[in-house]
Image (cartoon, rainbow, N blue to C red; front, side, top):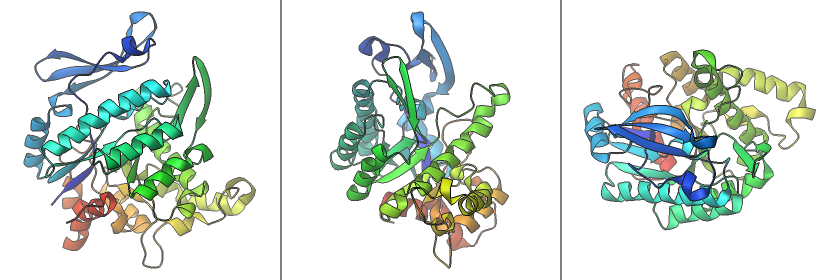
Amino acid sequence: MKIDLHTHILPERWPDWTRRSGYHGWVALEHHGPGCARMVQSQEGGKQKFFRDVKENLWDPAARVREMDAAGVTMQVLSTVPVMFSYWAGAREALDLSRLLNDHIAEVCRANPAKFAGLGTIPMQDPDMAVRELERCVRELGLKGVQIGSHVERREGERKLPDWNLSEGALFPVFEAAARLGACVFVHPWDMMGSAEMAKYWLPWLVGMPAESARAVCSVIFGGVLERLPGLRIAFAHGGGGFASTFGRVAHGFEARPDLCAVDCRVHPSEYLAKDGRPARFYVDSLVHDPRVLRLLMDVMGEERIALGSDYPFPLGEERAGTMIEAMGLAPATRERLLSGTAREFLGIGG
């Protein structure tokens, strides 16, 4: 059994949000051939910025099922493409788009519950709206939880406001609501730091993205989110990015400069990782592309906190979900745990 925790989906079509909202910055899907489309973002003056080429497996459930069966994937957990978070936008328009995307994911899951489970998206720039949509996702749509970004960009009209890290007090009610509802939270990097400074060589995706995930993990730990909500099920994409490999530096910084690091939570970061036979306090997916790194994660996190994730259907993902895990010569119980057991626990679903 293989449950792929980290996959993305979009509707085949949706309304023109630029026209609907009256301002630019929204993503659209332009179909230009059978099973082919491009994602574009509207710009000032009616121009468009290319984002990426995509194929029908991004929007067609039947195409997904064919590829899942070919790869031996039992179930995919569906979430939107992170560029659709739209935290930069007006909260009302972002909420309306979130509702459209969440209704679509719920519809796909209802049509084939054996193959798909879903995570919603919520307008994190307005925590009150985010909580209400989270409640709707779980109580009305039957989704297992939500996917959120590694930080929250904010604007007021054309004016840029300071970003919120996940430690921001204004966001705590969102995590509190997730814990209360028994909903899981999957954190995905987006809008990578340093994109303007290192545009060449695809470095935002290769360097900035792992840094974004590490930023999110550290924010949740140092912000005391897990200490205040021990029952919260939260996972970080791409193996938690650079967190595991830089943990020694993080721990040393906490010890050397508690005046800077221990201002919101005095619990040593090591207490959140695997220790004395118990697993870590949070989850990560397996998408690290190197068995040596996955073995490090197993040591740092415990196998009970690592779930198969492929980033389907995008090029930085694992082309055939679970290939690396299956080739590592792991004990059968460990292999089963990584391929499906952890995901079932994180999602709160039966065997």
